[in-house]
Length: 249
Image 1 (cartoon, rainbow, N blue to C red):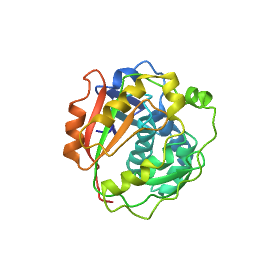
Image 2 (cartoon, rainbow, N blue to C red):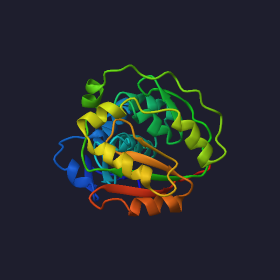
Image 3 (tube, helix red, strand yellow):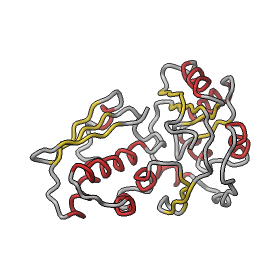
């Protein structure tokens, strides 16, 4: 479901982009993958030559951290290619200068994010569950959503060390919300349609907007239920349904 970043040796630093969602990046003279590569090369004192390849499967500006994950993958793959041996903490510190979501993607494991994203701690241990993602094909800029927000932020959530089942996890999370959801819907009303469609799907335990939108997610008892629900959503939307890699964690 995710994007793929790969790298090999080259005489220059370059990036080739392919994939179903790659066209949205073709017009960009620069992006996070290249910025991450240059930041790592500068930190290591290298010229930083490499041929990077991005297979883009996730929609751009969709609130699921696709670009941040690509930048983090660039840091990790070039750390290996250039044989730098830099620890995760150093890569995360470099990533924090590129974007608030990059450090958690460097770690590439479930985590609780605080501050602007740079304060990370262990998330509750996750059970096996199904996950559905759906985007109405409307890009939504994060700064615009924050500008549209009028109320304050919710208090820090009290979470357990682990959840024993998908239903238990969904019940806990149902008491919480996304403070950016209302302002995002005011800018992109289609988000409300997506949330309603996910909520009506058989087996849906919880539906929420992801990040600053416009992608929404649904929690399901298992991967099969999530995949079936995704297949039933409008074909004009970007949708994915399945299980989580590595769950239970």
